[in-house]
Amino acid sequence: MEYFTSIFDDYYPESNFGENCGVTSGENCGVNDGEKCEVTSEENSEVGVGENSSKISVFSTDKIFVSLDELKKWAEKTGRENGVVIVIERTKKNAKGEVNKIFLMCDRGGVYKSTAKVKRSGTIKTTCPFQLVGKYHDEYGGWMLRVSRDAHNHEQAQHMEGHSYAMRLTGEQKITVRDMYRNKSAPCNILAYIQDKDETNVSSLRTVYNEMRHVRAEIFQGESHMEVLFRHLDDKGYTHDFRKNPSTNAMEDLFFMHPTSYIMFRSFPHVLIIDTTYNTNVYRLPLVQIVGVTSTGKTITIALSFIPKEKEDNFRWVLTRLKKMLHECMMPRVILTDRDLALINACNVVFPDAAKFLCRWHISQNIKKYCKQSFTKGNNWEFFEELLSSVVFSPTPAAYEYNYKRLHDGLTGKHKSNISFSRLYCYLH
Image (cartoon, rainbow, N blue to C red; front, top):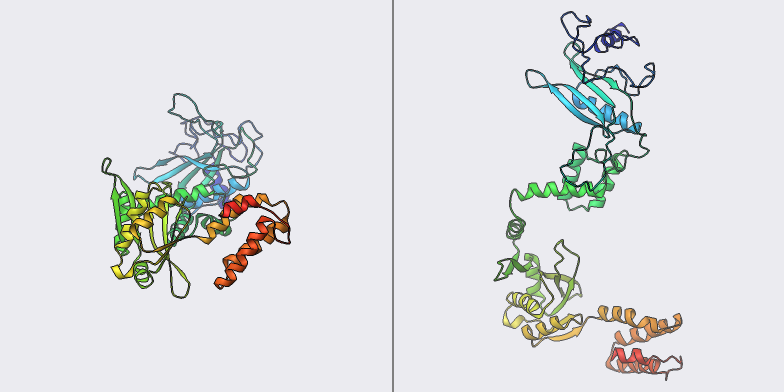
């Protein structure tokens, strides 16, 4: 106890266990002969400004911290437990350039400094006077923390969400983000893993996205997005080609095929399924996906292509690049598409001998979208689906003719179900 009492006397000379030593800034208090008291004009020595000095702060501790990092973690943890976010205000260095003193404050302390001529947003800063001071003591071989000002001019936070500093990731969590990102983990899964390991973490998806952006910057190593893309395609052995806009010299169309897909395509070139998808990239470019079918009925991705617009010229360029992968005797025999006329016309030009069919899934989706509202009773819609399914999955031509007649009679009112949907019948034809 005498040991800690001597430490308190040395580090809190102005308090003297509740008594003011009466020393002003820069005067010698006589605690250690030849040394000046640590109280300065920029550090208010009163514990709890405007409060009863006998009140003990939750940040008051006689613990000796081994390192500055340990001191900061303890202050941040104590602050979070009490609805306060602790941040670094400034530090001081000794003659050797080493940090020997640190000032911590509430994240609402200070004044927001904006360079904007017109104020466009608010700020959480309220010039909160709270301040902690940490100092390294050679005689004790560690850091000690004291409360300089324990007063706040705002209410304690009930939740840490919304505090930008509290939402930051620790060094270990940043490493976790980088490792999981390199392993192709989704951002939501990365955040869930971090919060599962640290219950106090209040980071958002935006925090994870920002860290992932830093990882990508490291991967790029100063290269542009296009340089990284083509380096990746070359390193992985992709077959690729591109087309530029002659006036702007900007790349517009990009075609690429994985080496395994190239082998599979040359083995099973007979059936192609072509479709365009959206919302796959930040540039909002349509992505053309070309899928093949093996002899066992399994689908395989053959090639992918980004195009600026769904025009016949763009589709023709993509299919021409695909055609170059095959010999004359290996041309596709069947091509399935949705009812995109530009794509169908391009298929007729590049693969004139292939049979073209509409995708069954797209047909069923369009029927459900445009025709289901014509059915007032649920059982009628179910009956129609049954008739249509029997037509689509007819195993023989004779079965097809029979099932088609049932569907025709059902839609025209000649079937015993007594439902009549002439408009739907016209749509299907």
